[in-house]
Image (cartoon, rainbow, N blue to C red; front, side, top):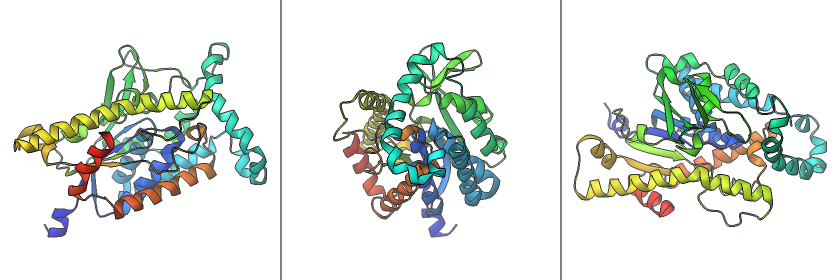
Length: 342
């Protein structure tokens, strides 16, 4: 093995959920596929799970080129199913329609929440099922040599995380991971009902940390910022901020716990077993692009092709800046994570 190969980061990749903002994560992943790293495992919640499935299936089929193609199929299909695509087809109308469009999206969750009991099919996931079924070859996930994928969902009965891996990562499991309860009815698997994985593991870090796969680095790609300067005071903005805090709580908790255990393990020179693997691992957090949090409450529901492309480009830029800055430098990793979650 050459010195270059020996020093190449072996990355366990954790992908946070975030609705249409998953297109931003797509942009980040595309830049990581160009970097001098090896992705050895993936964990995802909600949109992060869909990106993760496309990434792992594509890598298994045709390496980085296959992963890029799978991500392209996924997000192209998302935009094709968008009820807002008419505004891209008649783009000259957009400057006049944008305020109405944004306000309509902001209130769509409220409409779904309160009208669902009276409108059959309003909370149906069939469109998302079509998107994933048409764009991701799930048989590739269990192909020999495919890297491990962990998908989180939240059990409705007790709020605990359920992690799906290997052959368990079915279309139903991906739907469960992306099942926002104010938009969709719960997904039933093996007699249990599940909601979005972001409530309990956004994303799950433990299977990446303690797997015996030789990972040297853990990179969490965050979509929702821990802090914002102005949360807004409208009802939709308030609901969004409550949702953001809820979905970030488990990630904040998990990162703090990992940092504390890692610091103790290093202080006492613990090198064996799971704790030893954590002590040796470099922890990284790619925080969201500054413009991501300011896009408004409607942005996570906006699946127009033009909006998704803007997010993708934003992901490219953020990944480029991160790789050129902090990147996978081991000395910076712990300091950065500690500062962010302090």
